[in-house]
Figure 1 (tube, rainbow over the protein chains, first blue to last red):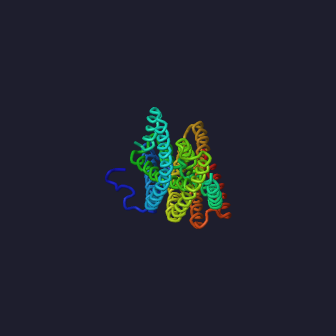
Figure 2 (cartoon, chains in turn cyan, purple):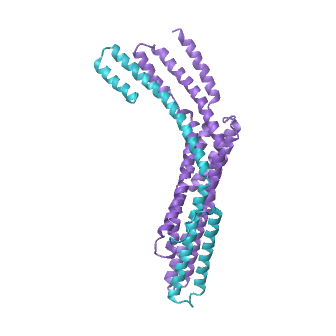
Length: 138
Length: 271
């Protein structure tokens, strides 16, 4: 598509995009049938030009089909925002649960450290201190 | 220990409460099927491959950059919706999964530490861990169900809208792309009929047979996927209209049927 032509999709409805796509496809098929029916009476350059036109018209059809898909998907944008919000909400809840579980592991590490301190075992104190720091994310 | 009978009673009461209210396995399983089906990636990939095949039937020239860019944008827009829908159903499956949340392992560790520190008798500790797990689970499950119900209710129109848009893109947009390929194929056939060489014509016959089989397969896959999306919307709507009790026997049976339907559709889409 040349730069002078409008960008497909701008100000178009998806129905219009599909209509245009189908019109291009029909035009391409007409050229194809003409080419076939008049094959013998056409010169080689004419055949080549018509074949190129046929392909180009079908490419336009494909381009507008792609635009149709994009427009159909754009219609779901607001709904996607609703679903994204719900996903965030669900994930936040699951994160909170994970926090409870983490609190338990932190408490466990703290108790293990306390045991090591009570036993006056420096190596174990050092080791459990590191575990607790890890659980606290320090 | 004096506290043991009380703890045991608590444990039994909590267990009885839990056994009566938690079984969302049918919701979890059907949501998992919806998630995997939604994420099916074969068809959007073909939004880009189809123009390439079509162009190759016309000439040796590649698809123009502009057309390729439009094709890629259509694929991307479709896949973005797929990804969100799949993530949404994955989240529903997690919320419906009672095993997704368990405190038992960490509580066992806590009890072991408390016992070692002399803060808790080992036997009492085991009971404590079980009771604490059940109570925490009961509390969490209540919140889990509330979230599930609230999200399903609020998102039902959105799920319907997204699935309808995707089905329209498949049937009309991708359907037209496939029709354009069929037209290119017909053009190829017409051109080959004018060929002088019988060998070329025979080759054309072979190519035609192969292409027709592929065209039929792709067209069926598009329809299957569109039907799957509609089924997924129906599953969600069924949940949204049964918010009061996701464990009702009739609903569970219906969800199991949906799950089987989705499995069948998934098998049809398998390469």
